[in-house]
Length: 460
Ligand code: F0G
Image (cartoon, rainbow, N blue to C red; front, side, top):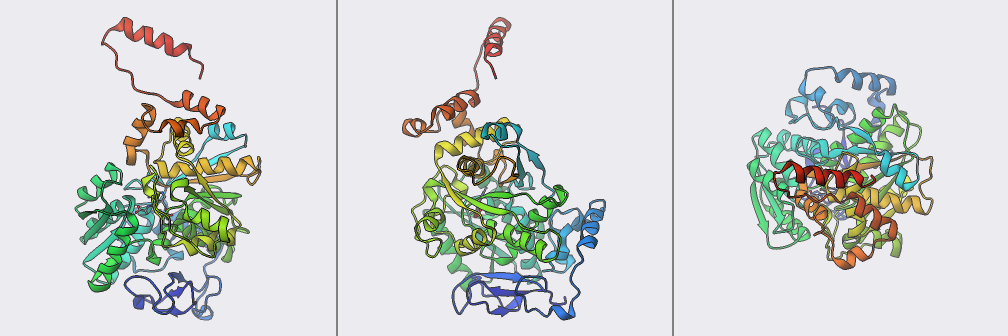
């Protein structure tokens, strides 16, 4: 195919053709990560004079038109935007019709925060139940185009589920490294169901990353962690879809969970490219929320403004973001700085409450996604998000990914007494109101009616 992109080092800015990227996706000179650049990217030197840049009105029209097409790549909510990610030939694309995820309002959560509206872009509504599908279709398709037979990743569960599914669709073999005992069962079951070689290592996520990085340097195995810059090309497309869903009105805030810290920069790249092309006049602030038990970026921003990052020993029940040494932290700092967003941390009690609130809106999400609402509360409380401003939460995973967590919460078995005690009176009242433990009754109409009467007397 005509080379429409280059790979640029985010550290020393050296540009190389995509095919020459090292197997661990780190610059051989400075060790930094790469990004994909196109003629329309800021600071690009990919020869824009010979390429006509996409026209904003034509793009908007084309993207809408493709919605009515029966072609798989048009039905995909990633490849519908392929004009802005020309990284593979169409016939190498492996798609499960990812993307096209709903944008919901959260009116009750907005009311309880005292702001006009909160929106949730539910990336958990992707084929394998998480936002990882949008990135995986992109990077897996590159693996196919480069002739790989094997792909691998280290994961807290969602990347592995997505990789296993897309590899199976493409007829490739996949190897998954996951931390033993520290991922949700739903996710573990997916990688087995989709036929991956599933390896539970007696270490944490950060230990799994070390192993997979060594493996790909010595074997012809394509790495599909988010250090792979092609993943981020897919993960930037929800930014396009969001703006389309908002009739091209730019929200003031986008809030994402932070784990290995790649997604924030993917979305920031999507918004920046739209601005560069004249599709939008400005970009939203992107804020990143971490669990307090896995908060290396939060600490780095507080202690040294994102200059250095000291890894932490991570621990949180939001296992998807149980990460102490995030690979893409420098990209995340750049996203925070370029968009003017903030990094916040939230406690286990705050995450559990926010998750229950999102569930009570009839939407639901996995614990890692709920940090967004918990973090938004902090941004609203001190005025960083104003009453009239629009905040979009990126809900990254489906509620069924971690049903154990939900069941424990509603049975009152999730939080420790000291975590419960951290709740302020308003939070305590909300917990009381939202908890819906299952009731076991005799199969007797009188008993059932008596219970119903009691329940109906409780104000909602
Ligand atoms: N939310 C969910 C549900 C996730 O699975 C992840 C990451 C994140 C948020 C954080 O995104 O890493 O780009 O900052 N999960 C990875 C995995 C690490 O292996 O599935 P990030």
